[in-house]
Amino acid sequence: MFETGPAAVRVLEPQVCLRVWEARDLAIQVPRVREFVFQGHEVPQSRDPAWLHVLQKALGHEPILLEACRQGTIVGVLPLALVRSWLFGRFLVGLPYLNYGGVFAANSEVAAKLVDAAVALAEKLHVRYLELRHEEPLSHELLPEENRGKVHMRLALPETAGVLWDRISAKVRNQIRKGQKQGFETTWGGQENLADFYQVFCRNMRDLGTPAYGRRLFREILSEFPDSAEICVLRADRRPVAAALLLHGKGVTEVPSASSLRQFNSTCANMLMYWQLLERAIQRRQTVFDFGRSSVDSSTFRFKKQWGAEAFPACWQYHLRVGQINQARPDNPRYQRFIRIWQRLPVWLTRWVGPWIVRGIP
Image 1 (cartoon, rainbow, N blue to C red):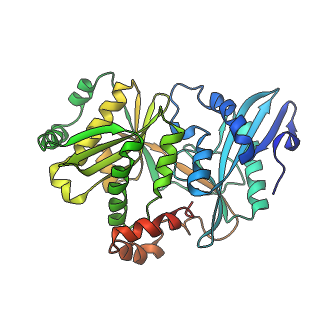
Image 2: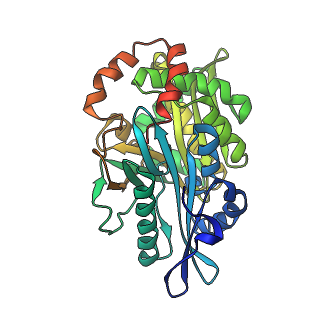
Image 3: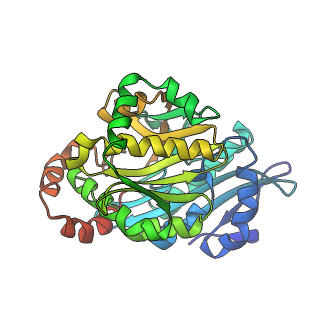
């Protein structure tokens, strides 16, 4: 498809070179790249290049890792996944499922070289567009399209749960207490909690009108990150009613997927679960809790804000080749009828069809 490995080294400027690694190279290259990425004090687990393994195994995406070096030292990386679907087309994304991605570089000059290489790949692979999930925008003429429709919601964590308890509002504390009085059983674990997590997740996604990722994605996440990924499940009389996947990075805990059953909203099960997620992050001495992305002033935005979370920018940048950047996005108005139909389908059917659909959505 394209040159990879040491033979693909190209001199970009004095003492700087670029390598393109494919799937067969990742077992050797990922540990080196991980050391570079996790040098900072606060690094989300979403930045781990091992996600390329997960996305390949679980979703069938073709992994590509761009690496910039100077005198044998890594100075920048850009993990990418080639997403292919006969329904939506082909996309080059950094990275699907995750809120963080795009270029990770020592300086703007190296970042620009990595973008140049990614755009060249996008042209060679004939994708509809290249999508880089940045926080702050990169100034680059080949990335003219942007999506700033959402923000990252993050909470700075204190040293103890008691301090956080005093910080949150009386209304939130009362909702947590109400949940505590319901007698929910809370368990933490990995693969042993996956079935219950996925049961709640699929029903919640159906209710939202969104196809759910396949169970294999979460199985691969737990397998690839056994020390940093875990599942929390709340049960009522052995029935799972709320569940969440936590990712503990370096100083940062993320919750990329969390769900609760609507019929238990009055019990405040979701509020209790989120309080326990925050406690868990504090117990692991994390300094930031990342609630994920939300549209400003949406219901999820307000839910996260009530915990004290603050909004940080999210700028997804694009090199567009064909169509429009929102053409395959679930929030595209053209899919509203499909969403309403999906919400009326039986859960068993959405569990069967959903993973096949969503794996092709960038």
